[in-house]
Length: 78
Image (cartoon, rainbow, N blue to C red; front, side, top):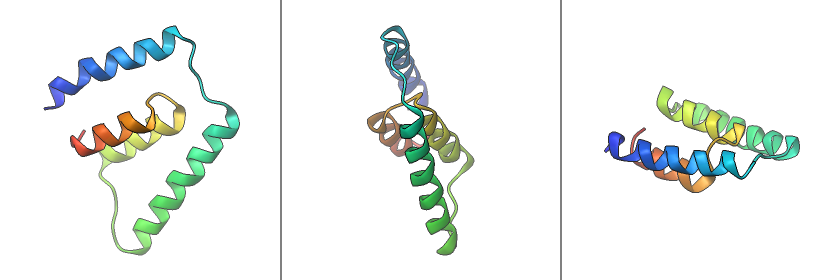
C-alpha cells in the first residue's frame, strides 16, 4: 500500500508548494504543542509511537502535510 500512497502524497505536496501554501509560525507552534502533548500523554501510559509515526508528526508540524494526509498516512502504516 505504501507505493500507492507516495504518488498521491507527492502530488498534493507539489500542489501546496505551487500555491505557495505555508503555515504561520503561530500555527507551527500550536502544532508542536499538540504533538508534544500527545507524545507526553502516550509516554505516561507506557506507549510510544513508531519512528515512522514520529516522522509523519514532524511533517505535519512543519506544514508539509495537512491533517487529512497525516491521518491517511498514519492509518496506512507509513
